[in-house]
Amino acid sequence: MTVAIQIDIPGVTLEEYDEVVEIAGFLPGGPLPPGALFHWVAKTDDGVRIINVWASQGEYDEFAERQTEIIKGVGVELSSIKVQFFEVHNYLSGTGRRG
Picture (cartoon, rainbow, N blue to C red):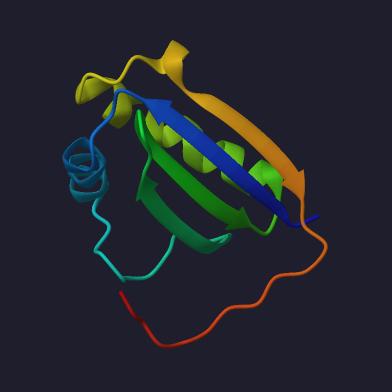
């Protein structure tokens, strides 16, 4: 089942997010890991919000487990992270990049 994941991380900056992305080897606008369908991040009033859409929660869980050490390594307090899962009814995606 396709899932959307909303991740709110208070106290984290976009620069810290970018550091995690770089350490993990991802490129802005670049390809996603297997099972990931869509990803975006935005600054919030108190941190960042990340939205992901994955083919299944199991694939997301495996990915998230691998990212934990990187996230801790840049000083993010894991207990502050709020994660919500949503069953996806439908999603659309494009091939062009804007932003």
